Length: 535
Image (cartoon, rainbow, N blue to C red; front, top):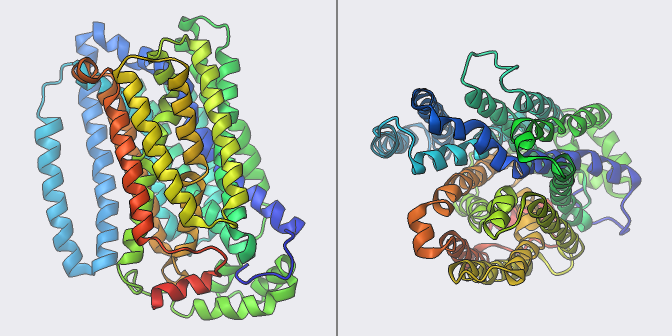
């Protein structure tokens, strides 16, 4: 689990526990990517009717502004709690007060003050938020992940995530029938997507954490990377599901009914995940955290019998300061965790994953062919994630991250140039595939490996800051993409190329950041990594 084992083999028990935990990653991918096949249908179902009914548009916009305000208030409240934990009550409240004041002013002058009339920009904003609304839940789930993992455990936290996945799948498919709060249909849909997002946020933290805590050090990177593979596999599965639901169907049927089947299909993996979780043990580290020493030692002997007693002693020693302040190891570890998460999103990967159908349609593809091309993107993503799994413990974390950042930067700049020059064709697809491949073998899985490794046990809850930051960055990118990509002004000036150039620049900055600040963790035990920060 935390020390090198005498053999390179992975025991059947560890392998099976990894597979079950990785189902959380599969549902993470399934839930976030299911929206890809429904982006156009959701616009037609929820937003197009507003264009011909001013009264309905006004009522919907008022409710939309209220929902966005509530969501942003919740996000800032979680950020406030993190600031207080980092800087203490007195200093934290002062910094938080400034943050709230700035946030209220910006929200009022740039969002709430405008007239409640449907415009191009507001319509794109509603579309972007509806599609990315699950990310609000991801921020909530990621923020709560640290508390849940430390209070009720990794296993029970994943059970909660599975239940939320199931409720979200049903509610998103039937938002008007399961509208228990009397909201507008679009608001009910957003509510259930937020619930699913909470499940994603919990799984995004707890699944890799659980795997890292049951894995021997010499294969930990490989096993944690399987969680990222499961995320991508979930995306590929739902791409196929969406394709077979929509294949050969009229657009009217997809816009009215097809998208419901896409969201409802998530109930199957959610039920499977929920059932299997009842057959896995709790993490040994959590058992030790809760003073259940006998249970922890018995589990360690099953997982890694050759070094169980030594691992038991090392983990006990590392947990002596289990309630240490989050800045006990300095601020650099927090900054690195946050920037790893932010750059993983600012390179634009979820624009490709969420809006691939829209992107291919903007190239002139039809509905069926755009879904096929999306499947190709997903398969490339999955294949190169396997490359990362096979190389992360061989080449190390830093080389993969630096190479991936540079390759993504080049690909995105070329993709933006092809749009700007209006030379869309096979080269445009190749640029998107090389970008996806570069991300899949670097920043996709390796970021999660690093996040699961760099935070010492005594401040493991601080990982929730990094996870929450990742979802905030994801929300920013996913919400703003339609506003940039479908803006008539930016389209006239840059022909859809503007946003890709921004993501390309972020790729180069991400590579520089890893080169300058991120330590190499390859082959080190979790306790040895903790020693890096102590020094």
